[in-house]
Image (cartoon, rainbow, N blue to C red):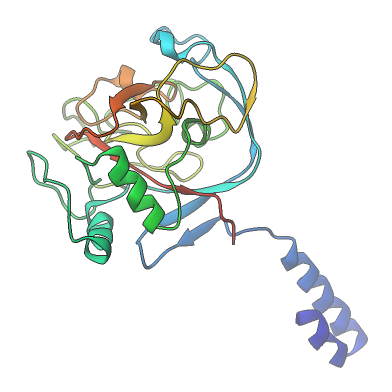
Length: 266
């Protein structure tokens, strides 16, 4: 170890080396991991607390976003910086089954989000990638990136300069899906937490629980699963960080994709 090697040094060098080794041992897990096998860039999400649900003062909230309530994320985890891409899913298919989703009704590049995947498809990919689907709370917490007052991942306003959604204008020149890093990331370095493709999460769909919660997972028996983030085909109201949508877990759609999370910290 660095501390052991320091024993052979002069006193001043020994002290500096030991202090450096001790400091490095307390740096914690890496803030970002690039997985060459899967192509996923993982971003570290710190433990913390936030308010999930309808943002105060938001006139567009739906009934299933209420009541807003306190949630604690008790331990850090990693979340993919981008939605799973066509190319990443192809690696998985070639490695496991050779079966790729039916292409959508439009052309896509390898760096576009894979769509027309079921909840089970998404879960299988994340397992292969060494992770899992994020819970609904694990999705909204980093989407807010430490903000409590923003309707969107970057604040209260949205435009086609910051996300891919209904129509084309400005930076948003894509009628359908866009490259997963086509727009600037939010404060946690996450791309497309609003727009581009809906994202499957782990939770079954149901009404919000009442009162504060720690690491909530939602109902496990529902035939429908939660989707988050909105898509290229939806109006801005659907892209709000608190918006929830439900979909049958075995169904596919041209605007549904996913991203993975993992709890294992190096």
